[in-house]
Length: 220
Image 1 (cartoon, helix red, strand yellow):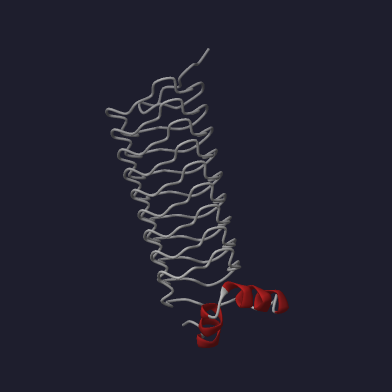
Image 2 (cartoon, rainbow, N blue to C red; image 1 turned 135 degrees about the horizontal axis):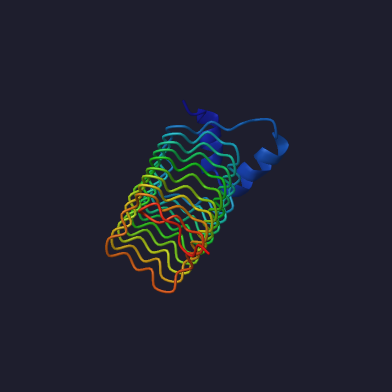
């Protein structure tokens, strides 16, 4: 359960909270299951914090430091996470529906089973992120760095990957029905058994890509 004193301190303001974090470097904040919906947390330092099942719906987390934080099953519906640092955070089964992740740092994060339907991840850094079995319907990954990301078994219906970097990404068994992969770099990616029905692959780079039927594109 959440530490009540820490919740009270956070609600006093980001400046007071960040000063406390500096003075208590060894303390791992516990804000699990707290209701922090709709509050302004710009530039807040929540690195390594336990935010499991925390309600952050509609919260302003722009430029927040959430590196290595645990956000499993948290509610980040419509949250503003523009340029937030969530490197190697745990976001398993987290609700990020409609969240704005523009230019967020999400490399190495674990999104297993998360809901990213209609989320905005334009130009976000998701290198080596684990996105297996996510719900990503109409998610916008425009020009995102998805190098070596894992989308196995993900539902990516109508997702937008235009101009994104998917080099060596894994999309095995993914649902890419009506997805936009125009100008995406899929070199050496794996699309084995992926559903590419009506997907747009115009001008996509496919050299060395494992296609849905198991064949390899651009093989000399």
